[in-house]
Length: 259
Length: 267
Image (tube, rainbow over all chains, first blue to last red; front, side):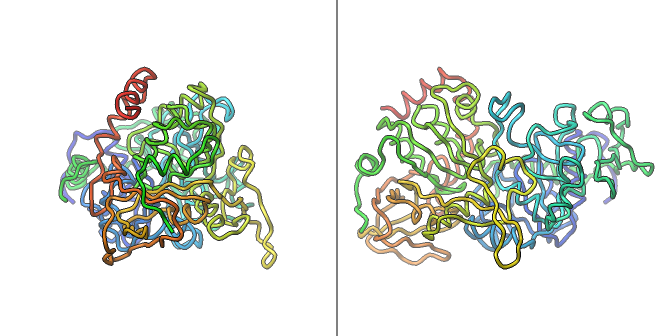
């Protein structure tokens, strides 16, 4: 991996950073949208044996193009196994067989709780979002959870309006009290940097910034008093290979190319 | 034994005003044509059940067919919001829409319990989420063997299940393959069922990974080629991604939507 392209978007940096976090050979329960882009990029770069699991029932999907959604036919057609929806959740997810749950969020709070249900009050919402889908049990049962989300004051809030999927709980200790099988969110990748929970308090701490991003910029995009790690890292920029692969993938989104 | 009839006849006799109706299909084999026939026949006050209400549910809701939605994820997959669904929830247009909201795991297990003839299902679910505070059909029980606290959700037993499959034979045995979602459970959990199929054939030749619903487990079979469009039917058609993208603009505005439904569905 030599050479870097100096012109890339913040979204591209986010997808590349998220893709690098996935270990080759891991099993990964993939949410659609940003997580799916990053997971497919990982499979085409440093994690060719990444095992992609989609909730529609595709285990070990190997799409040759970026699926527009989990409804894309390419997922089932390229999978190692196709199973029913009750089986995905009961046999594969619930017993804790999956390494990484890879989720998006409309709102995320300081303890990495996820909201995809409503903005505003549940009974009288300002914005009605799609809802839970598979995320509550993915967040509970995968060995760990990575969240990919664009960072802004709207998305990074002190307290989410609704806990759709539990991160570390309202007080940071609730997850441990509940005795959930998985470790919960261990990494949040945004378009500005990377956050990880404090090992004690579980509050999200800024542990990395992407090239050219100032800490002050990240603070301004965060709805709480953001703590910054003393060992703050700077993300290596995307390599030529990563960018070329990502752009080739995105040029195929939702198309029937390569079939 | 299933009766092989025209779609209009199946909907007219199986789906009544006020029924609980589950049109299932998880990303694949979505029974869109049957949903549009329900709109055409003007059904009202339906409780619609679906794990992933998408475009055809947006159409049913916008057309005023539903008073309640039991679901776990409502969106235009890969595109964004369901605007008719949002307008019903946020503004009660054209009629108010009551919600009963679960997770996928909860909904899948509710169908399994319904198909199994059990009153409820247990799962390791909903822990730490706000869903139990807004959804009355989520509670908890203690395992009598291990004392683990588990979520309990009641069985789903719709009046009617509606699904789309690849093939049926003339006796009404149904054959489907690929991503089969929760359709088998939905049919077995329901009092009546309608299965639309791509084609009715003399004999069902075996297909790897097939799922067969025997004729005596199905009420009506109707031949509707392309009945899953814009979703896909593996072996018959590809997903029409452009339709999903175009739906965003059609559904965003009430007048545009009404013009569309008048032109494309209520004809």
